[in-house]
Image 1: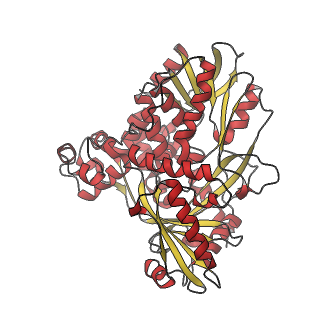
Image 2: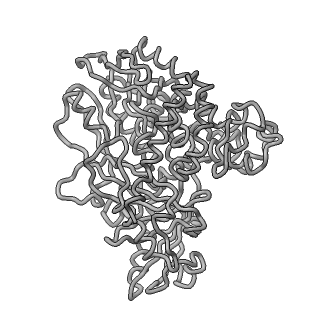
Image 3: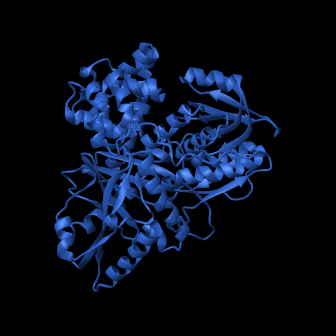
Length: 544
């Protein structure tokens, strides 16, 4: 379904459920509801995944550190959902071995970590082949030769998982659409009508500046950091409120920060932060500070960056890494449920669902890993409001878009299939592997979007993004701007801002062809991307 078709349906039809918010939570609710046979609409005021859901640490992890806070149920659920995601999206969930070094004067820290991981293995039902290993200091240095040697007592090594968060949102959105949901980005809520069996919701097509009205029996507020704004529009702002915290990440070339595993570091305040290898890069994060500024583009500050740089320096020997080595960065907001008297890192990551007097269902908090279960809990509330029994959720048993590998259990076997080999005939093996790893079975559609092998070649030095991917982003994933393509459909703008700026003119020209832009519109869109790219690394100028 195209965006234009979605807008027509929003204006001309009524729905069982309208979800406001196109991040991972809203996407998960839309998919679950559509799979249960409900008529579903989802609107997002900006682009899909443009907020928190594209700016996380991208770790699909069991939440080992939450054991220390007594969050047993959260750890169990997160660990089990991690396994579900591996089945649903084998193209997205990548094994990311996690190494936790222990420093100190005695072995006490090793014993404590060993006990915690043993409990984690039991809670999570971790297969024997994937259970943790405890390493001596010498063994730890073999795994990570640059680890700081002073007072290193040893380390733990265990598998976690990594997923491109924005791609996870997009594949969930596409899955919802495949199940019948009507989805549209750049559509914001202006006002709510009176609560009734059918509630009018007044919307604006941000792109065209046009107003429209849709109707739904139940409205779900999954707006992330904007949850409280929507509750105010609904007249239901009393009760639990958000506590926004900011997390930033810095990106380095792999040769400048040579790590082999996801390494858990300790910052100056003893908080755990991560160094994560990802393709040709290593990113470091995250911070956790209370935030009260603008929601659209929370800034990275020199103080944020120095906090992470200091953690790197204290965790590894012989690295002179600094602000000049940072080639990309991002900042995101966590929409946590406020808990009086707690510091940001102490606030629970559990989700909370609130039903307002008008019947609007609001969900706040939660973790990327547990988004599917959060959607099921939202549907339990929705079922009661609809006044009818819904069929059980099928969301755990059906693959996401791109996750149906035609009977193969992994991407390697899928790549050998006749269908894939025929579609990628003449395409270099490394290109095929990359596209399958990013799009799964949807790579077959990407391969034909540009019209030939030549369209799969990189657009420029420093990036592997191709013309075919840009065209597919518009035709198959509702990309509307240069930023949509370079920041979320691909991740070039976040991981290598300079490379993104170099190919942005070509991306803008392809979008102009696909979307019918005038030359003035093309220049306007390109300038908007340039401003955002410049702002992303502006902190370096004042950071020393």
